[in-house]
Length: 107
Image 1 (tube, rainbow, N blue to C red):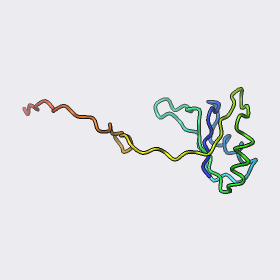
Image 2: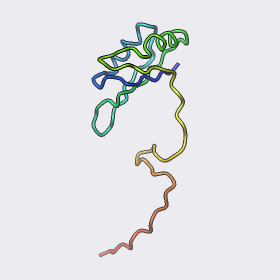
Image 3: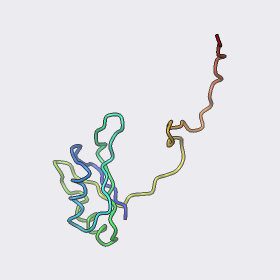
Image 4: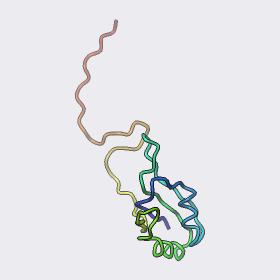
């Protein structure tokens, strides 16, 4: 089960997130989401646990739990909604119209 963990302390690293959830069972992966431009935590992450029962126990125990003065928000992760631009190496811009390019002068 994939679990969303929000309101994380900005100092939390992947290994800290993993250790927090390993108290409740086997963790397959733990990832704190990092902003590409600032290289800092965005304050949320995802944990994947193999066992449904262990996942539910972790969610129940950790949701609302105080971590460094911040109450965690822990719940089952929702699948990403499709649509819009993004993805790919250039990011994409969705379906916006483009203005014509000015003519090039070849010297």
